[in-house]
Amino acid sequence: MAKARSAPDVWMIGSIGLILTIGIIMVYSASAVLAFHEFGDKFYYVKRQLLFALLGVGAMLFTMNVDYSIWKRWAGIGLLVCFGLLVIVLIPGVGVVRGGARSWLGISSFGIQPSEFMKLAMVMFLARWLSDNQQQVTHFTRGLLPPLGFMGTAFGLIMLQPDLGTGAVMVGASLLIIYTAGARLAHLGSLAMVGVAGLVVLIAIAPYRLQRITAFLDPWQDPLGAGYQAIQSLYAVGPGGLIGLGLGMSRQKYNYLPEPQTDFIFSILAEELGFIGGTLLIGLFLVLVWRGIKTAIAAPDTFGSLLAAGIIGIVGVQVLINIGVVIGMMPVTGITLPLVSYGGSSLTLLLTALGILLNISRYSR
Image 1 (cartoon, helix red, strand yellow):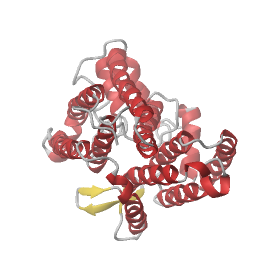
Image 2: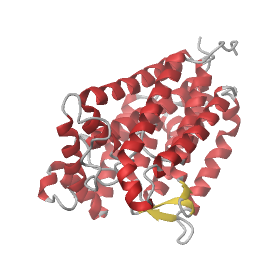
Image 3: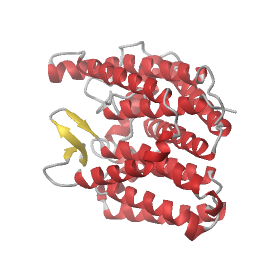
Image 4: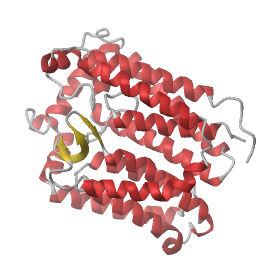
């Protein structure tokens, strides 16, 4: 392998640092009212966010300095462990129900989401599988069907929770790896049609998903029910205008917009910092994605290239879905904004994954 560069990608480090800083500021601004009402401490959420950010940065610094090729050896074991956790979380009395989904393992307020770990484990495994079987990837049964089977099984277990948003991010990043590995567009097109049919079935068997679709098409049909979140989000984004109402001056965080520090934190940012603030944050994400793509292209081997594509795919797909929901372009799915939304295991795990991406950048050709 080529000798490592003296430093990882500085553009990537800069964008990660700035996004994380904006996230901590916005978690405080979006959650202060809710935290004081629930816990009598307006710093409750931001203190926890700072703790997990510090843990995540520590993990990122560690993985940034560990040769990424080591993860190829552990990819299979990691996937099996995550499959086990996805099964365990479905057991009543073991898995914790939050937000209508049995997707958490933990005690009291501390918990982890196995589905978050599965996203990283899946891209690692697919990067390994497809790099070892690259000559077969254009053959559907020998090269494409096995990784699709693993991906489909993981998606099925995640949907039993149910958690369509996280499952969609995992599938999106996985398909990006498969495409990057050289899969035929005809095969992927056929899979897309099957996926659309499957999505229709998933919507049909769960009334709440159908409600989300109808609320997406016309949220004012049920303004106090299925359309409530979408309407309140637009009420936040719209008044922000060009420069916003000012940091800390959001009106929607006063118990109008549910979970303003998580799924809809971009709504609060747009309300307080306006179009300029929202554009700045999106610009930072674009820089991160651009440098991630560059790292994938310049990686010295196929495994590194596919792993980089998968990691940056997780970020890109999640940003696209979250902001799409906030501005009314997609149905509500319950997806957080990477590095910005309040979260414990998800924030720490994402920073760990970005550390791996930074390590790959050190070996760029």
